[in-house]
Amino acid sequence: MVMHEPLLSATILGVLLGILLGSLIRLARPSRQAIDLIGFPGEIMLRLLKMLVLPLVAGSMIAGVCSLRGSTSSMAKVARWTLMYYAATTLIAVVLGIVLVNVLNPGRGSPLNGDGVSDCAVDQAAAPSAADIPAAVQRTPLEALLDVARNMFPDNVAAAAVNMNILGVITFSLFFGLCLSTVGDAAEPMIKLVDVFNVVISKMVTAVLWTSPLGIASLIAASICRACNLASTLAALGLWVVTVLLGLLLQGGLLLPAALWACTRQSPWATIKGFSQAIVLGFGTSSSSAALPVSMQCAEQLGCDDSIIKFVLPLGSTVNMNGTALYEATTVIFIAQAHNVQLGLAEMTVVACTATLAAVGAAAIPSAGLVTMLMVMQAVSLDQFASDLAVILAIDWLLDRCRTAVNVLGDAFGVVVIDSLCKQDDSRTQHSQASSIPLARNVSGVTQLEMC
Image (cartoon, rainbow, N blue to C red):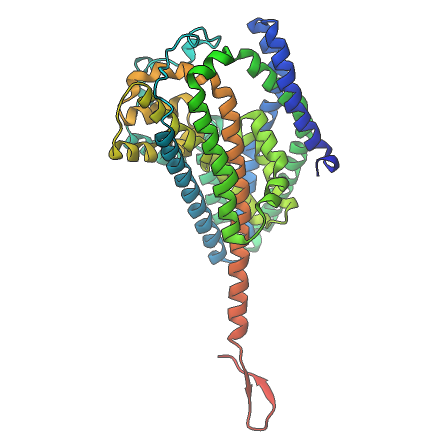
């Protein structure tokens, strides 16, 4: 497959080249300015992709809703399956993370302030203590829930776009598309304009993607050069890293494929191969949003319905964060274990709920990785150990890429599952309607159709 897809081949080569170059350049102990220059091509590529996210999300959501305008039941069905899938997979990921971290107990005997970790090359100011965090982000779980709801319903859609409040843009786009679909024939020119707009954005995305091999190599090389002393960091965090990676592997390699097979009886490997380019891009950029355009193209190539693609994937890139939810729940419990803080069943439940909420709301929060982690820690009174995040962030550049790949994979399985379930439901409906027109014979023996 790779041999027949030059862009995928080049992207994988970019990942390998970035790892090699980063490891070699690191030996020369480059300055901060030199590292910035190494990562600059990747920064530009990432900026180009993120520049296209808002128009892509808005146009796709509007077009997706309008394409379902022939049937209100179809629209409700897609929304119902989508929300059920996202809620179920995120909850499973959180529970899996909590079970693994309690079984493996990675925090035992591994204090986060161990020797060798404090010489981290990462700026320790990147992870301030709870006292340094503005009061605006020191929130209870209820306040966090209310903030997510506020972000979903912005009072100014232009401000939501400027602040990259994707949840608010999605809500406006869904509402706009729903109302546009009820206008009738007068709305056809506007709908055609949206379709043309989406085609143009798709062409722009394709052009930007050809810069991704160089950009990914640049980003990975710069991340490796910025990283701490990897040996000493892994010595202190090794079992925790294994726990997180094992959880991500089980979620992406076992549970999600099992859900796909159970719902569709399709081979999970075919979906993984079909979305391989999007998964590699997600790993290279650490951004589900940056991988969204490629995910949509991959879904089209697999034959998924266009209206379902435009509804499910943009929403999933914002709220379906399986890897992130698992990572945050695992990390918070690991920090508690490292400080001999016992968390009971009630506290574990709070961690599960808050980590799920944090993963859903992360896209609408600046510095999402730090702020959402603090939110979960505060929910179980662990914010006094917020400075430990400086050590966690020493290896986060790698784990962030792994959990982003799982996030993208979750979206990929989701669109295939929902597309299959909707087609199965449509098939049953058509069969039911056909069986409601029985054959009857009249008294003369001539067969005729009689509506029941």
